[in-house]
Amino acid sequence: MDPIIDVNDPARIAAINAAMGKDTFWIAHDALDPKEPSGHAYGIGVSTRLTSYYRKTHRKNAVDVTPDEVIECLVTANVKNWVLMGLHGYVGYLPMPRATQDVDVMVPYSQKERASKAVAAQWPMLVQVDLSQVVRFMDPADTFDDGKPKPVIDIMLPWSKFQETILKDHVLIDAKSGHRIPTVEAAIVSKYAALVSPHRDDEKKSYDAGDMKRIMKANHAYIRREILTSLANEIWEQGGAEILKLLDLAIEGKPFPAL
Image (cartoon, rainbow, N blue to C red):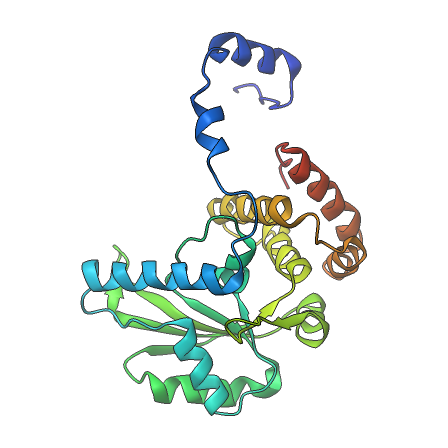
């Protein structure tokens, strides 16, 4: 069996420094990256344009659904207390916005039928799949390599107490876009929940950890630690203590432990 490598082992660090000590490329490269949060209106604008360009260029038959269109659909149907989740919900907390192909919106269970019926009526070409914690709409004209249709819209439902608390107490309205988005603490805890879940795909956890670290580092001056702790404790009893340790590691630029 191969030995387990400790990334914090001083001998390992010394060996790498000796081998790559003259390599200053990454210092100059990373110094040019933005360090502050991009802001929701700008971030979601960049993300939406990238996704639409990709679809129009490489997936000409795909249904191009934007967050604004989904929001307008829900608001017109009088859906209450919705909040953008997933990348579109936290993209403004990232220094460098990126794209995603699906729009995630969380609504209370009481609004599930109203929201799903509105989306189904607006985009009848999408395939609807009802699961216990999400109503997923997929595009049969845009598939993965294995032929399965790609998700386009997820109507998420609060499957955990921390999500119920987010819907109740931790939603803000972005002044420029009018979008309802999670507070920075809610966005971080949502990423943390994915990161520690025993059911989350390991490959996706690497994205969760990266995004959570970027959000923490870019927004650390604005994060309310008591709220972060309280929300994380609703995931599990030691969640608050653990997430504060991760926050300090992110601020210091140190790697996260395996969770």
